[in-house]
Figure 1 (tube, rainbow, N blue to C red):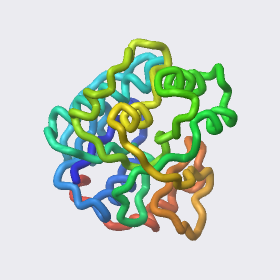
Figure 2 (cartoon, one colour; figure 1 turned 120 degrees about the horizontal axis):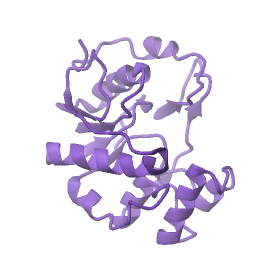
Figure 3 (cartoon, rainbow, N blue to C red; figure 1 turned 90 degrees about the horizontal axis):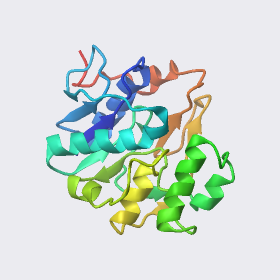
Figure 4 (cartoon, helix red, strand yellow; figure 1 turned 90 degrees about the vertical axis):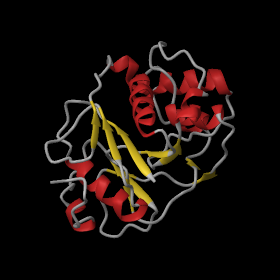
Length: 213
């Protein structure tokens, strides 16, 4: 299954290398497409794409992913540079009701407003599919998301994709670490912006992928 990864242009790309190594180990992609930023070591396909104003971050993710989908022309895995896969995973997971997730956020913050925007469209009782794991998508599915992406803060992209395409998944607790533990008994995990032991990724994913020099 091929992979599309939307990236901001100014980034150190440290985590990306290990994310791709995990994708190659479990998904065996023939093609990995980066849209936006590109590190010097990457040897896969790349689409240059500008970054938008932070108020349109999720719109930028939507547009970058759609550009990658058009290039591939076939189903793919939407992934982020901080998704680290530890076992075969082909399902669809949510992290509970979006309204419950919103209680842990500032409702008037950028991310909180995005969640509110999404519930305004799909209802107060929806599940939150914007969990930190890959998600299978295709171009037709992205085009089915009939929303006004010019709105400030946008909509939760993965949740909008799921509900626009009638998809249902199951609950799986999200795993986003500020400190990567010594033992991880999960299908996948992610890291925070302030994760303090990213060097551990080299131990977990030591094998160089075919997409790096």
